[in-house]
Length: 301
Image 1: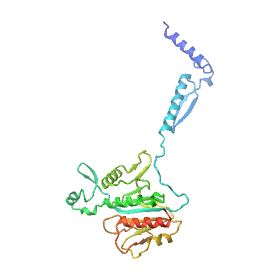
Image 2 (image 1 turned 180 degrees about the vertical axis):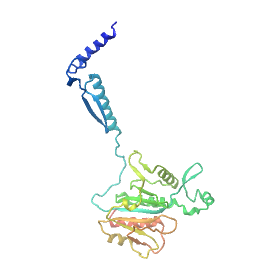
Image 3 (image 1 turned 135 degrees about the vertical axis):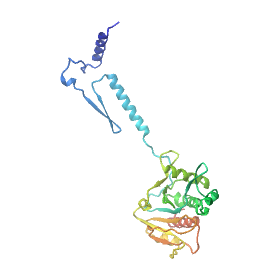
Image 4 (image 1 turned 90 degrees about the vertical axis):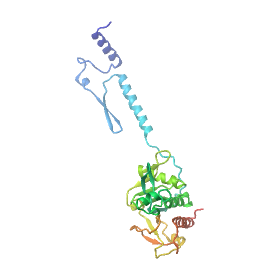
């Protein structure tokens, strides 16, 4: 058995053998060797200070912890979302934006969960609240989005973005490569999730397909954009094919279409208000005419 004093001396001798260049004793060494030297280790803006005059085993442990932390940070860095983007023509400097105004996407707590109100499922609920069920038409927004994202205009990469502005003033950005659900029920469930979580990501969990953004919508449009509103009440009736042909090729076209059951769009940021027919058209028909005219003008097959 070794007494405590002998045991400490033995440990000191072993330390001297392992680190002959470092002096640990109080009586040995100069004052410069007794000063503690600090090493500055940067890790994600948090700086750790460790003394250099420590045992090699402890130094190896600190170095291993730092390297493993760097590996963990590298693994935790966000990666690009694996979203299949449509082909894009790099030679074209112009594209098209769509703004869907006065969309009816009203979420309410019905039963045991939040739902988007529509006349097919919540007619009795709306009548009890003294509201007109046919003022709540999310099917019009759904039809408009399906018409836009399924067009050759979107598949060719000329569509830049779709913006949805609700009656409550909520502004939503929809990316061109977003897959809109085919059924109205699935679409309403997606909109409820969007209104609760403020964004919807792709399956990879990184890229945002839909997200709520700040008003006004003009902040999210390019400078060289021409904002065109469509309304049956407009006194300016045009042929869409001739209208888009005469447009400046260096401008991004922005079409503003109302997606409400009745009424007309009334916004101040529109540069030109036109009518594409002498008869009132549905939103789907109006958007189809716009897409076909642009596809022919830009020679999209």
